[in-house]
Image (tube, rainbow, N blue to C red):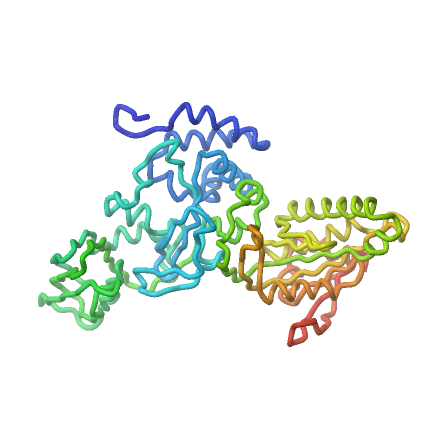
Length: 481
């Protein structure tokens, strides 16, 4: 529906149909659903795209994980759309905003940087949300029809970047430093009068590089740049002062042009946001959108993921002793307990393999906390012949997210080492690698648990793992020492 001012508002009938589904999805904190519904109806259109649930929660005083869950359930019922945005670390542009994980590519190309870069779920993919067009139609649902200002300052660049060293967010900086913002028609040219400041660069989209250095001049210089091969050429160096810039487009397609001045080589810091890595390790994502996986044959890298492997010693003998049905029921009960612990500690179960579990976490601290809780849950409480003894291993590192039977899975040497480290553990024991131990031993939230396990003064041990060329340093943790 539209108001008298011509601004589209939410479809009230559809909202009335979908809201109860969202409210009934789980228990929500007081006011949380109301806050989202009010925003979807009343916010300016630019505030209803690229929604960062972490920033949204912080601004309104809600808990982060619950707000992420709310946005996921709102997507599931049809109030929001999810976007896996690919962000260029060189310039801050959102090179692509595909709807789903299954649309991500292993690499991406940035027009502003004129280069390809690898897509990494923890460093270059930021997940955002946009109001569903079925609920409220906004101009940003059709990016190609946006004004140039809307396109570059509200849609094209990440909102989650600050520029290191000058304490400025990226988008306000770009607005201030704009030199050229125009459409360059196919076969056309345009002229611009610029006054180049002292020291810096004029850069932009498409790729442009005008270096500014030397002694300032009052003489007007002529500079012509031709668009081709996805960039304005040639690259050039000029002294500060006035320039008459001519941009030519000899191609058969019109081009958006945004050029801006920067006095520094920009390095970025990132504001808290929902990375693709974090979302993959969110159990609510698996529940709400678990069918969204990478395309078969495509692997998307993660630079730093933590994996926990578990196994149960004694299950074979138990099957022999009490029979398949009873043993299966007992093992299933153990799996359920472990899965609940993994979820409670911020991880997700990737898969089960016989009596083993593979789980994934964002942080080594969370995986170690889950492992220690599992050991505590399985501490001897009944006769030995009835016990299943867990053996656990934790490792962190780079890996690749893949599609295995239409489920998210992980591939790479980090996965292999994590599994082998678990194999090196004894009964009722957790083995962690040096990469994990360096972080968890100093974490205050784990100190009490490590003290309980008499683990703060552990000595490293070098072990040779099958299929791994170099020996690996591990630390063995056993509850009660």
